Length: 163
Image (cartoon, rainbow, N blue to C red):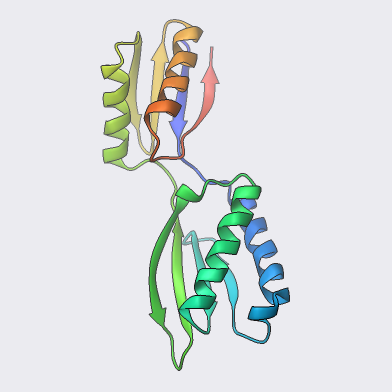
C-alpha cells in the first residue's frame, strides 16, 4: 500500500553554512566592526546563539541570519527565538532553538485536517512524523498538496514515499 511520511526537519548542513556565511558578513559590516557581534552553533542542543554589544546588534545579526537562511532554502519557521539575556557589562546574547520534528498537538492537527478532507487516505502519528497511507498514488499526491495549502504554520516536508 503506498505511503509517505510528513516530517518537519531543518537541514542542519544548510543551517551550519548559513551561520558561517552570516559570521563572515557580520565581521565585515562597517557598523558591526570591532564589536563582539557573532553567531555560534551548538549542534548537539540544536541551538544558535547570537552575541552582541547591544540589542540593536542582535537585531542586525538576526536580520542577516534569516536572510541568509532564506537564500539557502532553510525555512525560518524552524527557528524558535528566545529572549535577550545580559551576560555582563553591556554585552547581550540571544538563544535561538532550531525545531526538529512535529509536536504531538501539531501532529493531531495534521491528522484532523486529513480526516476532515474526506480523502481516501489514513493518517497515523509515528513518533515525530505523520504517516499517510492510501490505495492510490494520486490520492497521496493530492493529500500532499492539500497539506501544503492548509497547514501554513509548520514547515512540512514529505519523505519516505513508497509505492
